Length: 159
Image (cartoon, rainbow, N blue to C red):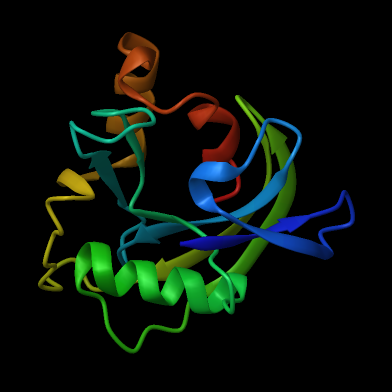
């Protein structure tokens, strides 16, 4: 899979195989915060055999933008692949440059769905999903922050 390499202005400067990128390459990722009509938040636990952050909880959907995709087309594809969500119209959220083990632009989207929506979890990507009330999530974050992706508390504020 080839992914776009971008500059600090998020302009494409080339493409590389996902596994050939180096620490100075800036890439593009997407994330989707899914809520229901009551404001409950759907989170996903990453598959236990993932290379990065296995078993940690994070947004309902996340992905790496591939060659030929936009941020929006990527999150729509990922929502279908990971949760079986079809024909969605995600709402554009915040985009920012992050630096963890590498640099990447992270474009966030939100989506409100009925709580009883039937979701089809892709087990190669997601170990499990769970709805949280805001209070439940706050409590779990305080008591067990190690269960969540790095900077989870910072990124959830974009919900």
